[in-house]
Image 1 (cartoon, one colour):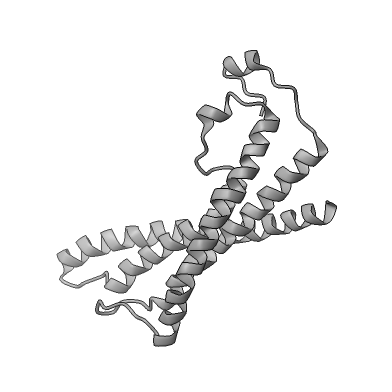
Image 2: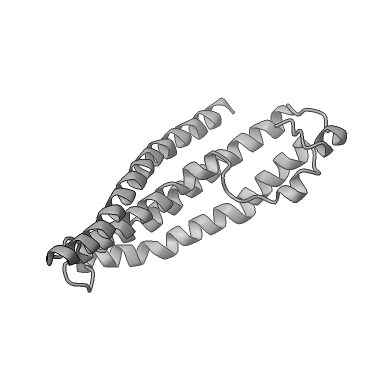
Length: 189
């Protein structure tokens, strides 16, 4: 089991590295967005265009980086939507079982499906050197590659979470369920 947990830790490290790229992309996206707004209005007043389609598309592409490269890290940090209304009524062991089941039945098939479906369009985009139809636009092929990459990272993180849930179930390390403590809003998490 230790080898599997080591694999989960390596997947965590991989998603954390991509999350650093996503974090810096947020700052760049905000800076580029600010420039696009200021450049548009300042450019009108001085009679010279200070923004471009390439800069506007760059802002969109940075958003894609943030969203798609942050998918796995968000799962790692338990930031995705869960059915907390039900989970708050369950004991820790049942929560872990449902987490494992949800990961194996819903998350992994969805993430792998999106990855596989988006792979061919991304490869085709690289083959033809797809570019923006807008004047001075950016190439589209590399940003289309973010879709399968992002969902691969999500699937890998799903595997890491499933490994941890399985290890927890095997080890039987659960706190006893105390509904009185749960009702007061003081979760023991």
